[in-house]
Image 1 (cartoon, rainbow, N blue to C red):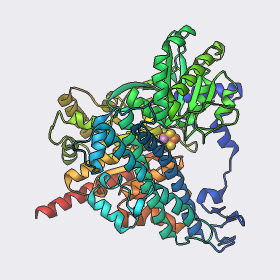
Image 2 (spheres, protein in one colour; image 1 turned 90 degrees about the vertical axis):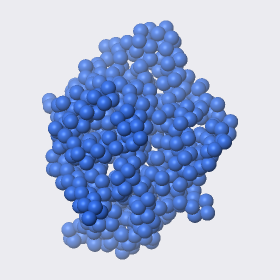
Image 3 (cartoon, rainbow, N blue to C red; image 1 turned 135 degrees about the vertical axis):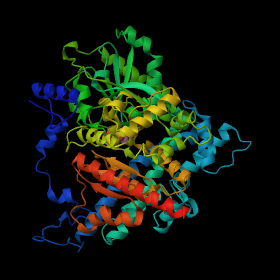
Length: 640
Ligand code: CUV
C-alpha cells in the first residue's frame, strides 16, 4: 500500500504500514471515516450561537437565506471567524499568562524552583517597555517586567497593551490606532469578542472583522510575552545542532516524549531527566534518558536545550506506535485525545499534567509551579518504571532521521551578523535585499493538517521560494517538517537555493566562519514574535513600514485556531499571508472579499488561500516583486 497521499514523511509511511498491518487506527483513518464533511460547517455557514439553532444558511440560495433570528450569511461567517481567532488568542495568552504569573511569583520569592537565567534579555525587555532600569537590581526589574506583562491582560484605566507598541514600526502602530484594533488588554478583548458574537449582538460583518483583528493583535501580544518571558527564564536561544524524526528514539534509552507547548514543564522535565540518568541506567537503559519533543514544546526544548524533535502534529500517534516511547508527557494544546487509545496497545504511560487538560484514562500527575521539582521527579520516574515494562518485540523504530540546526533567535542572528557589521548587524540582511541576493523573506508558521499530505505543502512551498532567492524562517510544526527533510542544514543551500541566496549564504559563511542552514528555525508558535521582531528591525533600519517590506507569511498546513489568529495578525501587520487549506469563510463572498482583497487596501496584508503549493509560491513571489518595485519607486521619489 502506498501512503503518499497521507504523508510525505517516509518514517510516517513506514509506521502507517505497521498500523494497517496491526489494525491500529490513526488520524488518517478517522479523517476518512468523517467524509463527506458538512458543507455548511466547511464554509462557515452553520450557526450554533443560540439554542434555537443550529441554523444553516444555504449558499446556493435554494434553502433559507437567513437564520431563525434573521442573521445573514455574512454575519454568521464573520462571527464564526471571530470566535476561531479568539480561540487562538485564548490559547496563546493562557500559556503566556502562566509564564507571566510565574515570573511575578518568582520575583516575589514565593516560588523557588525557577530563576531568571537570562539577565541580558530581562534588561532588553525592560528597555523595550520603557521601564527605568538605572540602579535597579535583577529582582526589582523582574518584578516590574512581570507586573507589566500581567497588566497586559487587563487594561487598567483603559491603557493600551504595552508589549505591542515597541514590536512594530511607529507608522504601523498609528495605523492600528486609526483602525481601532488595539485592545486595552488580552482578557478584555476575549471577553468583548465572545460577547459581540453572541446572539443578538454585532451583525455588521466589517465591524465584526475589525473586532477579530483586535483579538488577533492581542494574540500577538500573548505570543510576544510568551517568547520574552520564556527567554528570561530559560535563556535566549543560541544556535544548536540536533536531529528530527521518529529515528531519534533510542532503543537503549528511556524515551521520554514531551508534547504540548509550555517550557515551564518541559524545561523541568529535561533538567530532572539529566539528574536521574543513573536511575535509568540502573533500570537497564544503557543510554540513560532520551528526552525528545513533539509539537511546539519540542521546538522550545530544541531551541534552548538541543533536544531532538521526534514528531510534528500529524505523527504524534505514530511516535507511540514505535513501541519505544516509555512515557508521553503532555501539557497544553495540540494533544490528540486519541493518544490514549494508542497507549492502550503499548506499555507507554500517557501523563497529563495540567488541571485544565485531562484525558480519560490517562495518568494525571499534577504539575504545579510550587512543587515543580517533585512533580518532574515523579514524571521522570514514571517513565523509568514504564521502561521496565517495554516489550522488545513490539519495538519498531523507523530508521529515518535528519540532522538539523536551530536556535535562530533574533539575538543569535544579530550576534552572528555583528561579526560582519558590528554597528548595524541588521544591514547584513538589508544589504543583501538591496543587492538583490535576497529577493524577499518568508515566515513559515503552522501545523500539519490531515486534509493535505503531511509535510508535503510545507516542503514544496519552501523549496520553490528558496529556489527563487527567498530567505525562509520558520516556527512550529512546519519547522519540524523542514528539519525532517534536511532543510535546516547548510547542505540544503547548495541543493535548493537560487543563485542570489547561495551568494548570500556563502558570503555570510566566509565572514562568520560558520555555515548557516537554508531555513532558519526560530522556535515555537509563540516565537513568531521573533520573526516580527526581525521584520520590524529591518523596517525601522530602512525607515519604512513593515507592510512595505518584501516580507510574506505562509501556513501551508494550518490546522489550529492559533494558526488562524497568527494569520490574522500577520495580515494586520501588513503581510500577504498564504494559507494552504480551506478556511471556513467561503460561505460569504463579502467576508472572503474582505479577507483576500480589501484587506490589502487597508492593511497591506491579506490572505492568499491556495492549496496548490507551486501556485502559492508563485503568488507569494509576485507579491514580493511588487513590493520590491514599490520600495524602489519610493526611494527614487525621495531622492528626487
Ligand atoms: Ni504551536 S499549533 S500543530 S504549529 S504545535 Fe504543532 Fe505548533 Fe500545534 Fe500547530
